Length: 201
Image 1 (cartoon, rainbow, N blue to C red):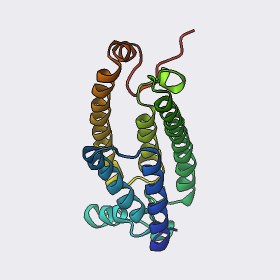
Image 2: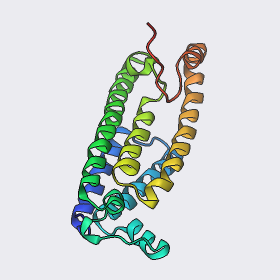
Image 3: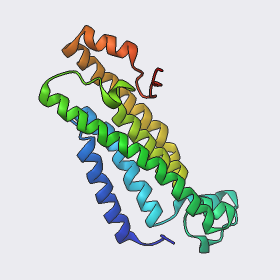
Image 4: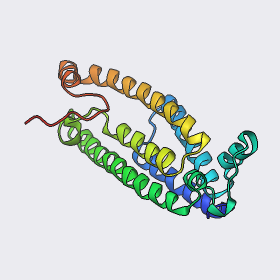
């Protein structure tokens, strides 16, 4: 289906990378390191999706699984022996990706508005979680790299990305405490880090 389309792989990698740096732009060298983990995931993931299906090859070569290459490089299609499995995974995966992208975009918009006004942002989506952009990122990676097109790289990278951005979030919170003091400390007490708080009432 997608195997061997390296030109398309390059286009998708450039586009997704542009979105990454558009909405989650690193601001220091340490943040660039964490972004590098995500960038490596993007390159490896889409190179496998559109270029060479390394996961399928690995499972067939080292575990003796008998896959029909006519189903393309998608693991679900290979396991279930039908492209319908890929279509179902794609639809569910992209629904998950869309919900994550909505969080990232809304969080990005509110952060930039708050910076202009020089105030603590604690309304909208930030009233439900302290880091909606990172939550959105986790949801996107899960929807694309676990549900839609699981690969060895995407499954292995998913927890690494979560750890890397959790550390970044904690660093940012220390900076926010220095800037906003008790106001941010109270915000931390009331609002969870990544998992949305249920609306009361």
